[in-house]
Amino acid sequence: MREELLRIEKLSKLFTLGLFFKRQVWALREVSFEVKRGEIFALVGESGSGKSTAGKVILRLEKPTSGSLLFEGKDPFRLGKEYTSLVSAVFQDPRASLNPRMKVRDILEEPLLVHGEKDRREKAVRALQKAGLDVNFLERKPENLSGGQRQRVAIARAIVLNPKLLVADEPTSSLDMSYRAGILELFSKLKGEGISTLLITHDLRAVERIGDRVGVLYRGRLVEVGPATDVLKKPLHPYTQYLVSTMPVRHPSLRREYGEDFSEDFEALCPFFSRCKQRLKECEEGVKEVRIDGRVVSCNLY
Image: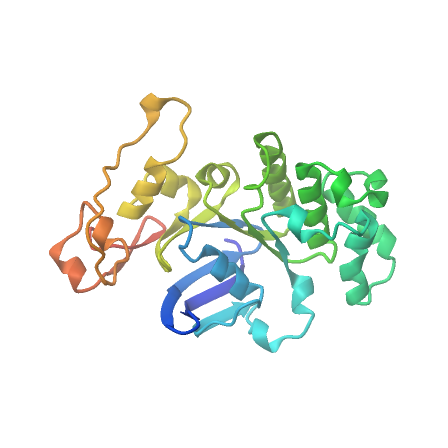
């Protein structure tokens, strides 16, 4: 069994929106999961489910409203800049995340300079090669690279300090199909070198390809967590069933049906209540969390 690297426990994040007419929105509600050493843990869900907010909290770009976050048993918000060498980010759009005025060499050496590292060129070359590019790319600028090459440079920058965890937020969504498979395989390769990845994505095919375990978020609540293969092949929570039914399939005859029933919104503990075809009367009162075959499911059906 893999050792735990990151633990999220009952994490909640509340945002206050609006300038004159303020309203509060829960982006995360008591979310709990862990990321183990040397694994790819995927967070999936529709836009607005809270996936990116979870990633931002882990990266210390947002502070949680309540709950706890432990990295190797320590509170990241009590650590200094050394935390940024242990946990690094890969963002959605490499065109936006890479400085167009800087050469690849400078982009890769910048984190090393911030952390006072020596032998910066050698370490930059090593990271670039791990990301699947050769030394000739050092003198090029992002504008002279393809989308896939830019994302590889972004990944090289993320691993140049030898982090233990990558937070990858939709790392393939801005890329052409021809580049996506290579980027996903790169994360698998890095896993083999002991680097864990929190993969934040709406692409269930990506999770199917490289994910070890998966957590399903809906409206800020985690509704199902388990081994990726099991969750995708036999989803238990009605929302997970809905997500899987919308996955692209190789042939229309293979598509699973989940008839949507959008009724009025209902402020229940189950965020999927108003859309669920299988809802029970007791779902209006609360939701139980059950463990089934290595999975955690928040649903009264089990």
